[in-house]
Image (cartoon, rainbow, N blue to C red; front, top):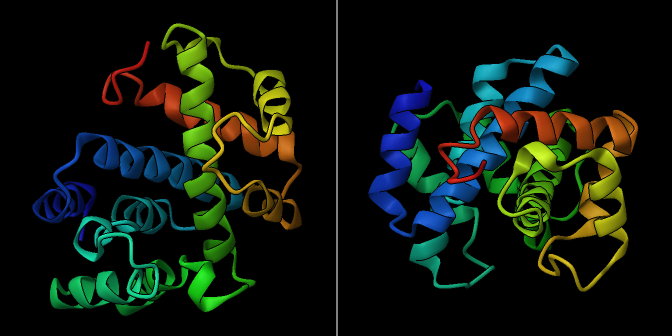
Length: 182
């Protein structure tokens, strides 16, 4: 499955523009991380695009999140190893993990919203977001309260946090117009 096929599949299951944008943002960060780490950029991007494919269908039931997506993805003939990482990204159900793709997906899933929130306080300009901005806002627990800061910090087994922030910011800058950002 390529990027365009993954986006088309996502859009058959996800109707909210904000959730589609979240998936695209997570995908961009995943691709940036993969390239930086010498991993498969296309596979990691697909993980990001499809990680919340089941979210609207499960109506917030976190016991189903990941499992339902896994079934959807296998039915769509996605490679099982990619579908499995997507299934496991629901750490509330599946617990901790130690593969680079697993760690990267939950970190990217959580940092994407925080970086976008940082852009919004800068008039919607992700181009004005810096690692210092992200570091400062990460300390404010009320800012982007939905992002799990502990999951972001798990990336430290693979890189320094400032490096992760820089990769994430740069990845979102590349797709800023798709996300409605400046």
